[in-house]
Structures are given as C-alpha cells and as structure tokens.
Length: 227
Image (cartoon, rainbow, N blue to C red; front, side, top):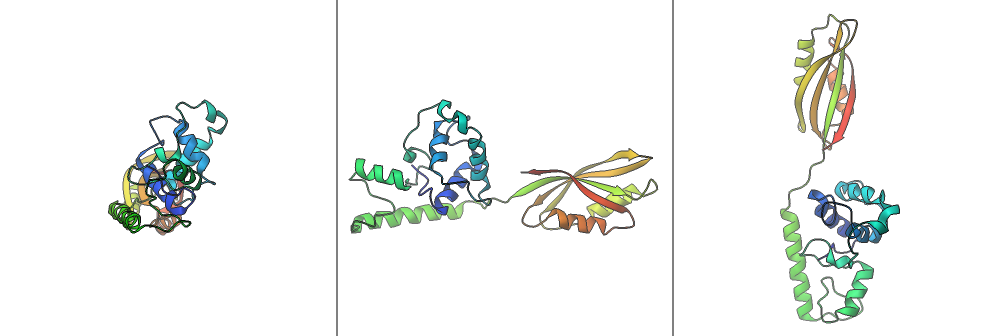
C-alpha cells in the first residue's frame, strides 16, 4: 500500500484520487492515519488537486489536537491504494532496512537493478498507468444562486425569465426559480444553475444576462457553492 512519492506531484495526484470519495485516510473521523500522511507533505497540495487540498485544510485545523486524535500512527506504507507502493524518502529508507528482499517498485539509484526486478517494476507501473487512464476525469462544478433585478415594477418578469433561460452554453444547466419581492412592488428573479467551472464563469453569465437590457437592470451572485 502507499501513495507513491508524496513529495512529488505524481504522489499528490494519487492522494487526490484516493480522497475523491473519502473524507479521511481511514474511517469516518480524523485519526492518526490522517496525521501520518499530513506530516509527510511539505505543504498544501496545489489548487487543481481539490480533494487533497480540501482534506489538507481540514486536517490542518486539527494541528493542535493532533496527538489526541484516535488510532495508532502506522508507517506511511500502510495507508493508500493497495496496488501502489510507498516510495516517499523516509519510508523508502525504512523499508529498505527492514525488508532487504522486497522488490522496490521504482528501483534504486545506488544499486544495479536485476532483470527480474526491472521486469516486475515495469509491469506494475504499466498496470498502474492502465488503471489510472481508465478512471473518469473529475469535472469541477459549482452551484450558483443568481439574483436578476428588473428595471421597475412594470417589467414583464415572465419575459425576463424566458430571456435568462434562453441562454444555453456547454457546461450550464438551469434549475429552479422564484420571484422574490424587493420593495415598492418590484420583484427580482432568483434562479439556480449548475456550471462546469472550466467552461462557464460568473462574469460570462453576467455579460449574457445583462445583455437583455430591455428587461434586466443587474445580476448578482447570491450564493456560490462548489459541488
């Protein structure tokens, strides 16, 4: 078991994929397993590895209570996907001292690699790459709540909503809506939508919605949540 080399970007990517459907390294509460992996990282994962970054920030909030978290801290190689060996520097050295007969998945720079070890290493790397390539790419999405304000109480709100929903883009899905009173007989349109972050930005949405200038005075993002 392991994450590969957690000091490298490849290892962080494995950690990110491992945490895609998990809140913690083990179980359902913070534990010494999380502390062991957290202490190995040299810093916060990059923003594009959002599962790993979300976990990192959460465990960081427990820094002062780390020693009191449940569980027993085990060697780093005891955590992670079962088909990947740990090669993070400190653990790799311990493994080499304790298990001289084990085959190192990533080989050694100091010793000449035997043909058998090389063959096994290449087979395992090929298996890992094959499994990794078959995994679906995670698409970052956000749920937005938009406030669309008309010019006055005489604005045709049904037509305003029709204009807003006429905006169709790849990565945009409209949801429920309602009219919310804002005073003096004026109501605003409050509408939800789900967007793919890489395809649809709030600035683009505002530009397209406010283009219906006969009906729309302004647009604001009332709520923004990552999915």
